Length: 177
Image (tube, rainbow, N blue to C red; front, side, top):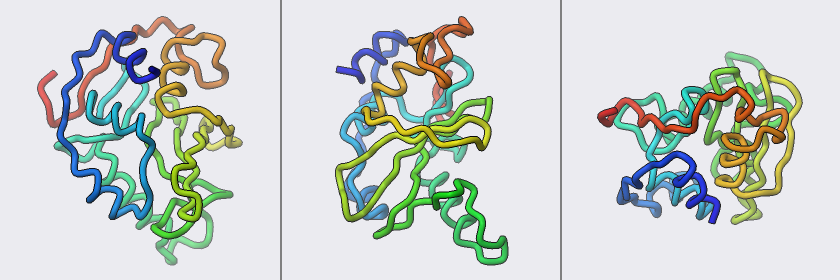
């Protein structure tokens, strides 16, 4: 339902990517939310409303979900950088553990993640924060959160509808605009 609302809101024609979910989820060690997979297959990676970055599939690295996760995990686990995580007080999700897995962000330094716990597969609360501030937890689907960010001016502090930025989607670097 929420995926369809995002598609209708943006006027997007779903791309229908074929995705090897077994390989992706095998690398992560956990299943991803079903509605995220639908968004991924329909949109690929790119930008909503010229400001909301959606990580999924991208021929380049900018919006590629797995590439971004691998880089974040590598940095988070680099002991030469100290004990502080970029997502403090949490950590970046590592297979078999508990942590944050980013699926979106904004040009204003908002971050959108799932709190993943390998011992609770299928549980994907959305955690979001603005510019390194406190994390806000949302017990809703990825697509509902994204829809509310794009369309609900009262969805604060993350809604962008009040800025009248439109609701178009621009695919990532690997596809024609």
